Image (tube, rainbow, N blue to C red):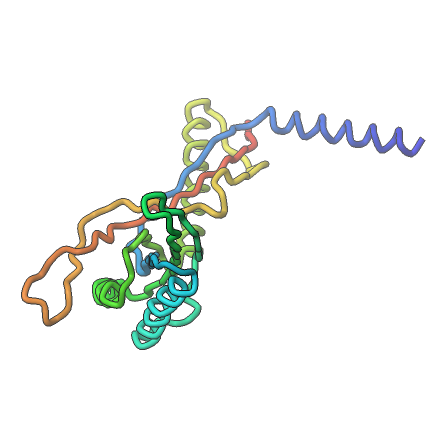
Length: 229
């Protein structure tokens, strides 16, 4: 008997919710906040090749050690430096019937001062890194701007609902359902716009070496509003 009562209660609840959702004004809203990045995440890689595993590891360790010490001297905090991967492999060379050992190691570095990009990357290249895998711009206040984007999305949804209501000669009531369509792990998309990044003060020319641009942080929501006749 208890199970029957519970089933009936759930059924009536589902019917009531369905009826509520089938009436009203249902709209999507989008909010966008544009910001200038204040941080840059660079990923560098070190590739070494040698005749023995011991030798290739020693050579790689020597470069990585120099990189870490250099970054420490540049006042880059330890929490902003992270090893992304370490790969060791052995390849057989059929032409001379010998083995070659290869080591690949990647390190990501977060620069909270974008103006140091040229100095840091030049210093790393001089220490023996083989290249820069990626450069990603980001904001130190991403959560703040995501919140602003959500508020704009809600306001946009309400504005749309009021436009529909005005055309139908009705009034918008309270929201009965709000859902966020965008992921909380949304990755901002950089929209590149030229910004001049000067070299060091000792440089004889002012060159554009980095296009920082701006980031578009978006939020999307779905809102159901009740109708006041």
